[in-house]
Each structure stands twice: as C-alpha cells, then as structure tokens.
Length: 289
Figure 1 (tube, rainbow, N blue to C red):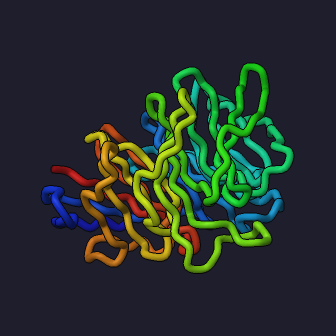
Figure 2 (figure 1 turned 90 degrees about the horizontal axis):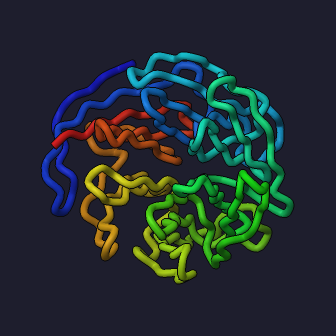
C-alpha cells in the first residue's frame, strides 16, 4: 500500500482534519462496495459488467491494516454490490438475488427476488429485517429472513442506490431517474437524498437533486456521509435539515478517487473506504479532528 499524510480542509463549516490515505489494490477487480465489520473489511468485486449474471463476482476479506486474509473469500457471485451484516450473516445485493453468506464458513445461499432489475445496496434494522435497493426497478424491497417473505416497502420516481437504516428512518441515496428501458440513468438527471419513515410511511426529500449518488453511511459525529459519481465527491450532510456541511473532492491533493462507488465507514477510527470501480482499487481515507 502507498501511504500519504497531510492536512485537508473540508469545505464549508467543518473543522480542519489531519488525513492519512492509502490505496488498496491487491486482487481487486471492479470493486463496488466496502464494508467494515469489527476488525474485518469486506470488499465486493463485480469483476465483469455490473448487470451481467456471469458468475465471476466475489468478495474479498481483509484486516483493517489492508492485509488480504482471503482474496476470493466468497466466489461464484454475479456482480455483488452493497454489503451489510446481522446475526452471523453477510448480505449482498446481486442483480436479482440477495446472497446470504455465513460469516464463519463463507458458504451462502441465494434468495431470488422475482422482478428485480438491479439489486444494489443493503440496510438492516435492529430486528434483522433487510432492506434492499433495486436501482433500475426504482424500488426498495423488504426481506424478512425469519419468514423468507419479500415485499416492496417503497416505490420511487428515482433510482435508489444507497440505503441506510437508523431509528425509524430509512435513508436513500438516489442516482437520478431510470431511463425508459430500465437499463441505466437518464442523462442529466440528479438524484436526491430521501428519508422514509418506516413507522408512518412518510417520504421526505432531505437534499434535492444532489447528483448521481451511490453510497450512504452515518458518521460517528451523527452526520450522513454520501458518495457521488460524476462529480466524484463525498458529502457530509446534516441529518436534521439536509444542509451540506462539507465535501471532499476526488481531485483534491490528498484524494484520488475517480470512479467512486459504495463507500464503507469505520466509526471507531473515522476511516472512509472509497471504491474506485473501474480503476480496480479502494482508497482508504482516515480523517482525524
């Protein structure tokens, strides 16, 4: 790994941070999502096209120092994307299936989602209920691992990409509007950050038309951290009023992400993991106050 140290001033009202960055690349091929669980980092690798059921995708397992523990810990997936774990299982969105992986053995089962077009990010609530974004289907599904029941919890006029569950709210980072053939995003359209109250069913726009959004995480300071393609940026957002508190551009002196995807976040250290899909690496950015 190559390490860079220095200082970075996030735009807006956030204070100065010291930053250490490194780049992970060993064994990565079109990484889409990074996820921290305890002392382990999981990275989903699409390998092939993100919409093709070709069976060449895998998940890599590393420690938090960047050492590869298993280059292809789980193989035989198609184009795995968002990752989230609960009760000994790691869940991965995989086109029209949800991969349910045993964290101890690495064995898995695939749960088909009939009619799904592009299952993407995954969120899980405190009871273990799983929420899965269907980006090109403009839906968010609910999956109950106890009953195996699948239902649509949210239909949108935008393409949900990243999802995050906290309290009664499901946060959604959208990528824009889906095109007429449901195979991509309309040129020029911008996605919003949305909140959906799982108790009341109320849908609100927190940040309108921010861009082609992808990953979404909650920081240890209680802010939303959202990644945006095209403009290649990370945004820090106030969860109460949607105000953008700061941003980090991929072209800044100490950042080098140029095809940002679904970010991972380590709340213990404040470390952000930024997949660069088509550049086959993940940038590791540690921000300290």
